[in-house]
Image 1 (cartoon, rainbow, N blue to C red):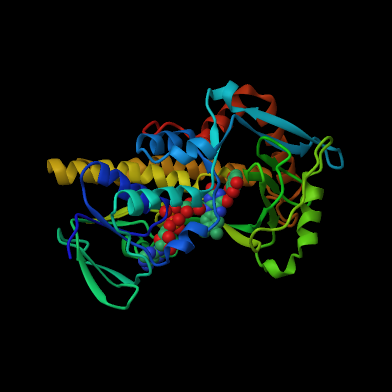
Image 2: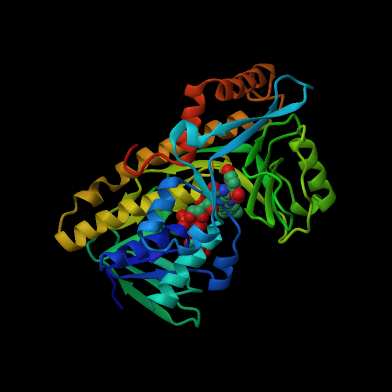
Length: 401
Ligand code: FAD
Ligand code: DHB
């Protein structure tokens, strides 16, 4: 079969791209290794930047997001001024500093909304459960994708352009950029989703001697929590009681109480990594989202960056296929990489400032800890420093980087 754009992967990148192309009258086929129930249930990111929300609204897929998403106009950084001192909250007021905010809405809810729009409303397909995906002739103007469908039947999909939106473990990146710039951090996050009403209206990022903790939420009934753990951590080694104990210790702050509740899914451990593949293009194959770059989750940038990439890609593809002008495709990688590196820096900055590093290493020795404390204090006492955090966190306008 034939299509204009072959999209590998039905995560936020692949699905937003498919929708933007459909709105411009460009047809695409979306190939996804998993089934619909799996991608709709996969719990991951939860923070939408202001430009992401605006884009989804402009695409006409934000009805439920506008009803159920939780607008936040700030976050708190929670830390002690000196070793042994009690922790205090320092609010970063996004509304005051940069005049906008973020929206808390689960990534899988975005995915559900985009799938409902494509499958149920537009009647367009997504090929779920594909296997053996391979990309061919990407250096020519007639690339193709071969794969087996869920029943095992083999297919050849001929395209004008292939979009590699297949995430960190996909097949696209090795073809484009075998060498990458990367940093692996000496810690991971253990994440839980609890049936417990949040006790704050906003996210709390806590720096503590035992390690970082993050207090987040999904709804008025569900709390999302993370704790820093060592890299070799097996979720089975952390009983529910141990997780709550770590959360209570690290999030302790005068006047703060935390509701406990049953975990709604098994605790998961996410390693922390920064990675940038460049260029994000080879011939007719374009990488977008986690296929091209990874950020540690501390800056809440991963899904937002994936969506920013495909906005640029959709415009470039439409220009090339409709007007025969390949200028946008030629500048795609450079345009995206500017925003990508800004997000990489911000995510590295948040990660370095907030986590506990091994005292035997540069980050965690007395000098490293002194720098962290100074940076935390500067961030919450200087309007210039707080504004820098705020404008990065809520998301620089698309095209502004
Ligand atoms: P993905 O969402 O990974 O989508 C890629 C899709 O491609 C998947 O559906 C996959 O099944 C499919 N696929 C893969 N290989 C193939 C193939 N060969 N053929 C066909 N389909 C294929 N970010 C945050 O900001 N905060 C968080 O708390 C957070 N937690 C995370 C936890 C985990 C475990 C992971 C993996 C990521 C997390 N992220 C988080 C990052 C964020 O979720 C990603 O940046 C975001 O999902 C990127 O979207 P994407 O569409 O590029 O990739
Ligand atoms: C969430 C995840 C993040 O990585 C983050 O920085 C903030 C919130 C969340 O899952 O709610």
